[in-house]
Image (cartoon, rainbow, N blue to C red):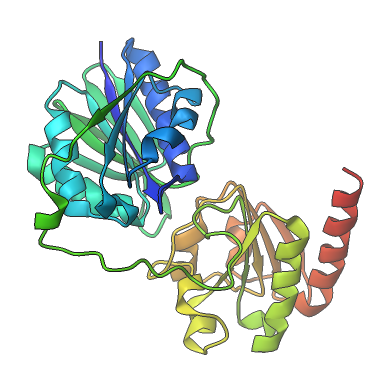
Length: 327
């Protein structure tokens, strides 16, 4: 029997979507080995009253660790608590490869002297080994990686797993932090949330991104209108656009920006530089709009529209709005 310990991410005392993705992945792993899913969740006082969705997505046991410091992230204290819990005989420690997960996972792996497989698209058990697929060479290739030993720490790319309801009766316990967050050497004094964005780029099922093909900053309004038409979309941008000040750097998608894997990615006026492809190539469906039929973006796109983005996007926006009216 191989039990899995999943770490459910929170922000401001609320569960994030990536928490449900990690629990879903953990459930599949545990089912393949006849094990249980134990989910460790950190949050401020009152967090225990908000963990029911974790049981609804397959957690056998939810372990709640509350402290005022966990209203923000405190990776040092959280990693110590995860490492202490990991000594209970888990085969896999599963986290999200979100910004918080990228901070936590290496700390946990180092503390328990375990291998780390990061940014996995898929994760499975093969005998005594943990096997993941991982985008590499700026996402040009998908490598299969295997690690043996117990436990193995794995971080899963946000949006790579679709949350699935596998309801379990809520069984919860509370624990104290393994170390006092007040003694942490790193103090998180504030979390700065981007302004204007309706959805976080990492959480949005649809991402509409714009590039230099929009010709001017004010034309980004067309991208925003298309995102509004979908109702569940976030707006991204290329590095060239953010460097020119058309959009904030927090919107940048690419090798030096955000990594996204939405259900639908629409590239508007984006040529498809390799650095940008590295940030969105694992999207489930890619639609490209560009007037240059030879643009590299079309090599990774599932659907392509050749033409002027300034003419096409308003038509597409109207079509999306009309389609939503009929549903």
